[in-house]
Amino acid sequence: VRLRPRVLRDVAAVSTSTTVLGTPVASPVLAAPVGYLRLAHPQGEAAWAAGAAAAGALRVLSSRSSTRVADVAAVAPGAPWWFQVYIMRDRQLTAELVRRAVATGATALALTGDTPRLGSKRRGGVGLPPGAFMPDLAAGGDEDLREDPRAAQDPATTFADVGWLREISGVPVLVKGVLRGDDARACVDAGAAGVIVSNHGGRQLDGAVATADALAEVADAVAGEAEVYVDGGVRSGVDVLRALGLGARGVLVGRPLVWALAAGGAAGVRDLLTALGAELEEALALAGARSPADVGRDLVAPPG
Ligand SMILES: Cc1cc2nc3c(=O)[nH]c(=O)nc-3n(C[C@H](O)[C@H](O)[C@H](O)COP(=O)(O)O)c2cc1C
Image 1 (cartoon, rainbow, N blue to C red):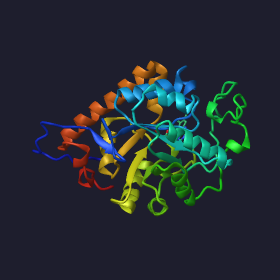
Image 2: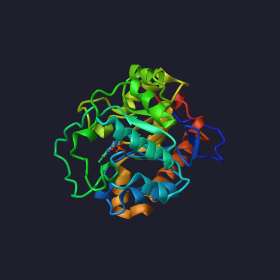
Image 3: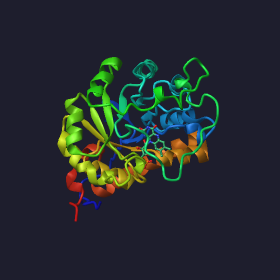
Image 4: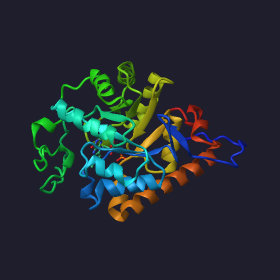
């Protein structure tokens, strides 16, 4: 994706700050939901959340969190976060988890739509340690439901569940995993406040289109009616600029934050998000844009 920088635009003052579903953030870079973060660091989701908060970033907590949702929320009171939802076969369990997330501060839900079931990973999975590794899914306290069919994704999930989630939670719902304009439209018609263009980091349907190639189609399909986000391979400030140019309001970053968490804990997460913000600030200036709002499709060269 090539850029078409503009000249002589007075970029003496450049700001990366923006809003996501109305919430002010330091930059359009959000922390993507990644499950089981205690595999990367002993403090797992708590350190990841503290790092994101210190960088002024919004985080999207995975429903496969290896730390209690309430404990993650308590780490950075007041810092904004959304909760990622898998609709589990047990609706009651799903509803309880969602209500707990909203009660502890989640201001929106991201329903992951690309995982009607867990795709097999070619190199096999990483084994999870014994014990209540997903404590919010521990039924009576210690009984870990991770292998229990009740906690598995419900393959019968449909667009109607966007409305169901909205109803039980009272907060806006985004749908994550959208790769087509018609699906984006259907999400918005079903009441979604936003869509996240994602192929789950290439971890669900092998051969799915790259998100950079799907983004413009999705953005055009819901233009002005819903916010559009994207994830998958966003690795630099220039990548963020590309996404904004193709129609995203913001991007989510997954794996790099896991690596930063493993290497440097909360400070690692903070420093990576801060560095991405600084790179975006430079990219905006060099492209002749003063803010994310200043970036339009004209900044991106047409395919080919
Ligand atoms: C180890 C791992 C666990 C993930 N867990 C979740 C999850 O629980 N829920 C979800 O919606 N996406 C999950 N994802 C997908 C990420 O949110 C994101 O879509 C993907 O990693 C692409 O972004 P990236 O290239 O910046 O990593 C996971 C990805 C990875 C690598």
